[in-house]
Image (cartoon, rainbow, N blue to C red; front, side):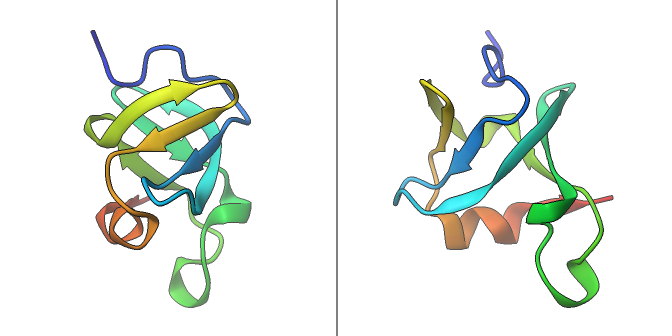
Length: 80
């Protein structure tokens, strides 16, 4: 079963440390596409970012908890 099953639009993505990483725009294959408003600053601003579904530890209520802390998860984001 995919790590992204059960993930819905507008769910909050949080790191293992409970820190906000982003908000789900949609699931794209086995990746989570984050909304542009959570795209960061500088050259990252205005781009969608993706989190690999393999980083999902669990889906609990309206939150997606990752297996990595937020500061590590953002370094693993893909930009498009």
